[in-house]
Amino acid sequence: MRDALQSFLSREYPEFESVEIQEFAPIPGGYSRETYRFDAIFTRGGARESRPCILRKDPPPAAEILSTSRQSEHDLLLRVAEHTNIPVPKSYCVANDHAIFGQRAMVIERASGSNMVSHLFNGGPCCDQAESIATHLCELVAELHLTDPKKLNPTGSHDDPRGVGADPSSWDSYMDSMIRYYISGYPKIAYSPMPAFYDGYLSLRREKPRPLPVVLVHGDFNPANFLYDNGRVTALIDWENSHMGDPREDLGWMSVMDNLSTTNIMGSVTKEGGFIPYYNKLTGFNVTPEEVAYFMKFTGANIGVPVLSSVKRRLDGEHEEIIAMYIFQPATASTMLFATLLGYPMPSPEGA
Amino acid sequence: MYTKPTIDHFLDAVSVCLANDIMPDLQGEKAQVSLAMAQQLLQCAKQIAHVEQQIMAAEHNEMAAMFRDVGAIVGESAGPEADRIRARSQGLGGKDDIPALPAWEELSAAYTELSEGIISTLDDLDALITAGNPAANEALQRVRTHLGARTAREFGTYIVGAGMVGRG
Image (cartoon, rainbow over all chains, first blue to last red; front, side, top):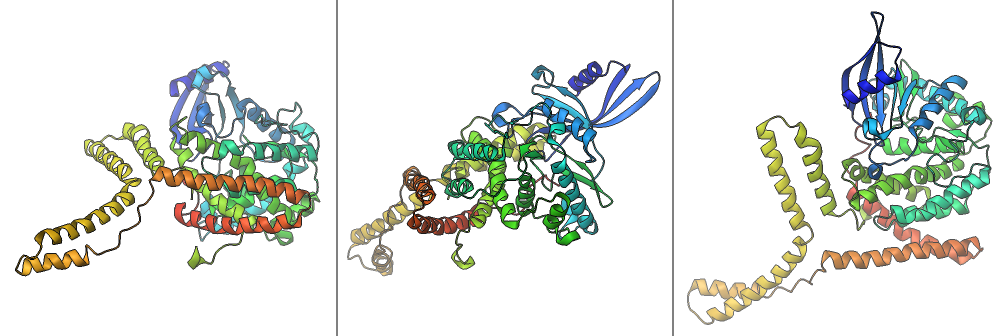
């Protein structure tokens, strides 16, 4: 891998006399991509330039959770950097040829900042930064949702980046196409009968909220996908599930993942009375708690369908990655979240 | 409950992870031997998992019958040992048989059939609710009452700890 990386960067950057790879090591915790950290040392005319980098590599197709294009992710990172003030890692180059790393891959900047979000909550060592960071996150996601989607998605590459039949030509067609994908995808996720999820998917069709403008959403806006330092977000990362959609998706998914990760981004903003009121002031979208709850189910399905499909493929013996067995745990925890959002009567603790 | 993953799936996943992800990075000979031992224990657990309760129930009933037979064979023999054997024949041999537990595959198939019936019922109720049938909402609530209890049991049975390992 290291030799392949060195050769690849040498070809991508012919203006340099040499490229050296140092401190190459896998990064644990990436649920959808294999990630490696390294320093690339570029030499030209006796001068050495060190760039902290990350290699993001697709897993084998059978083990893949989100099937999206690294080229599209690269292009989007460049456009977000150009058209917004949202801090994102620089994307350096893409290997679309599987022969180079075995699967498609991209090299991006290893942005500065901590990813230890657990330190911000539950009495952690950085909990004094939680409010300012959550407030900054709110501002960043609002800015993303207010950015002209034509600037961020000029070629339509993010209309249906997962190839699931999404149709963002209007809000209704987008919602209908995605709900159709969730319901029709049920057989692909049902490694065991899952009536709570199916009930949730059907309820999405019956209970659609009012429309909002279709915008580019991050798509995996969650407590694990930002870096921070000194009370500020230093990078919003992992844009692989970005797509044209409803802006409330990012609010719903952050709420879901706050719940599953025992973090409290959504509850840490005090400005204007909280995360959603502050977001509403910034965007004018007037999002209600009921709408956030709806999009918790919607995004639970959006990410849940590919995640659960991956678990099913693992159980069907299509691959042997431990991650697909492990994520059975958060997937099961999300069943309880669905049950709560659907208002299921729950037994008293002693009867459970 | 989930019909999948079964205990087999969990144990196999750990075993494969040990072999593919852990073993190649183990340097020490003692650690390598310990890992091989651990894999054998996992295999042992896998062999027990789906038969333990069925075998125990069957052997409970076999033992009770055996105590009755031993008492009958000893018959009217004299002495405290024979007295104790006759007492066991009556006490332990008189225990009620435990109902035979169905084999895992049989139980799983029966459970799956009813659970899939819930999926079909949800489809039908969705159509009725959309058509404005008020009884369908009440019927859906009855389904959800079952699913609430079931989801709570699943949560209590399957979830270990909180959060997502490796995610900061």
